[in-house]
Image (cartoon, rainbow, N blue to C red):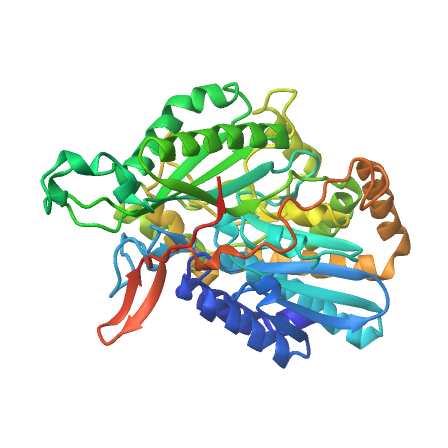
Length: 518
């Protein structure tokens, strides 16, 4: 792993560069450019805008041997603006609720990049055959790019994928992974307001005195309200399923007697299996049709995402765990601990000698982590939450590595630190680098093992064939849920930064982007 030590500073700098860009989903232009430029300079063949997604990319290197994949994510989350300071301080010169990195995806992406670049360096040095493919995956917080890359065939023909995420612990996921995620946008349009009511009921020339059509805002509010009322009837209150909404546009009219013509609302839901997902969709679609019918509107739907559930591979998990155990847990120096203590001081708390939980400096065997997860779930439930890394798992044997991204140790049971403390630490190299480079080393070692140890790859492939009932296309295999010709939803009304004569600003654009009529 000499290559990683020699390049440690520039990779750490890239992590902070991406963290400072803090670009939200589908708007990660600077972040994607930084990756593309670095990969091209390193000799990779890079396709920009892969899958018709402006901020996605695919970088390829090598020939012959197994085809191995890894990836970067780089989107930040609106409402999480924070400087890397030990006190509450949103980023200067912007709205206090602009985006910021939470997990952070800056660390996630650079860890994956570190592993891929280090593996390439070793393969070049020792003449190891194999093909490395590194994906740039935007909009993970919307489960955005991976279902689209999968639908358009970008994951076909691979031998293995390595997935990664910063986490409170250092381990590898074993059997209990993440579940399914669906998201769509309903658009209500009042296309023919003149068709509502009786035009003979008012004097000539006094149309504004007529009872006007309810219009798009009323349709949106009915959709919102009816979905709240029918939520309990969608599915049994079990399995930790969630349904969330956000109003993307509400009105496009002034408060006069003219009807609002256009509104949009997005729904996203996460469950443990696809049958639950489809049942929730059926209720939402019915609610949308009824809301449109009683308000003089038309309604259409635009799909944002559909992910499958995970497909575990314990052979891949075991191989990755052995490499993580060889690398060892992250080590945090005094500068990292001092920053944590400074936060505690500013919150009026007693300063701890080690303000981080012990888990961040220890390794947790996958089976022990599995037991922790299972202890919180009913016996019948295999999956929880959602993350679009699951899309890789249906195309080749895949694993999900986890390494520490520290939080602060609570001073007492039940105490919760303010969210800004977590965000601030994400921009501190002394706190993020240890876990990031443990991940990078583990990813590199696992890629090299897959390229050089035929028996390890064969075991993982055999398990993949068994779990899918025959591999890709097998009787238990689940194909991509989005159509191959899907138009990526990057044109929808997602928050973004713009630069004007006034400087950088945080805005919300408002295009009309209707989808399939319901």
